Length: 88
Image (cartoon, rainbow, N blue to C red; front, top):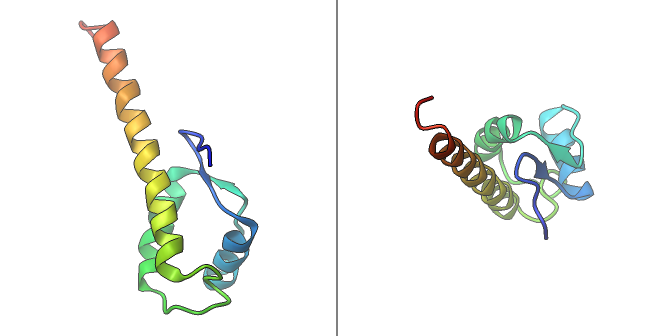
């Protein structure tokens, strides 16, 4: 699966499960900032099949993996910018 460095992608099933669990609207694409908070909330929820159709920890790990890729891309961008503009 291809990831966008500034977005977290969710399957339709995952988005629907999160909506049920947290009583919030979720799209197939969400911001890393929002999903970092959501991961913390998900860790506190009980595992229910209707909330986590593919398993609680699998869902959390999938989101965390994408968050790590977003963070890495962000850091690489910052490092690149610093090397291009050493006086800034």
